Image (cartoon, rainbow, N blue to C red; front, side, top):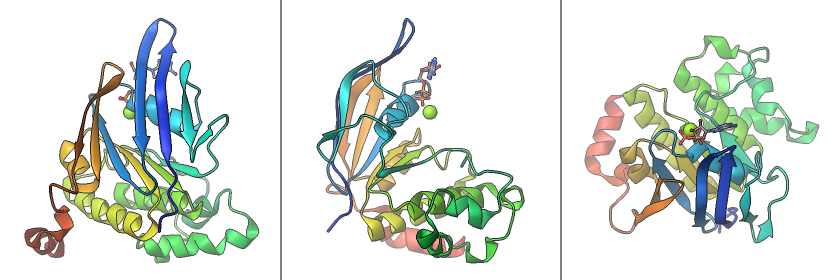
Length: 232
Ligand code: ADP
Ligand code: MG
């Protein structure tokens, strides 16, 4: 069972003035699938993710979520950005609870516990490390009970060891929630570690696509990885 939705983008074009960033990109993700998108800096990955979230409109083409054309902000999607985008004037707990109704507030603490930060509810974002801030950003995204999780280089500014730790967390959360996940990353190793399928974008289109899970065990299943992880 998955709570994930099918995502389909067909012939997506997005230009900013004369600059064509996406030139007829087509993409599908099955419900509950974990897809990574890799591509060079400036190749339009963030632009694409914003279109999937409904934060921007394509100049041509269509995004469908669960078979329905996306016309406004996607209500079942949550995005995590590289810089977390926590509100500095709110403590950690209220940051996670942001936008939740009264009934759902309890979920904020539950989600903080899930990312290992149950004891940081009353801290200010500024006193957290970069990795902790991204944990809070993940908790906030999950508190919205997304059926589509969009990750825009969420680990891009973290050190290598924290990144490995966070990769394991993201995988655990995905295994538990089975929401459809699209991870943007320029780290090919990270893409291969986490995703079922890796897509390469170039010149505003999909330039290649590789299945991962069926041909290669997940890294966390590798005995050496467990050993390494325990030493961190
Ligand atoms: P990536 O995430 O792959 O690094 P982006 O999607 O952020 O790439 O950007 C792709 C290109 O589109 C870049 O050249 C960027 O300058 C341009 N771009 C993105 N957003 C805008 C915008 N709102 N206005 C003008 N140009 C933009
Ligand atoms: Mg980007």
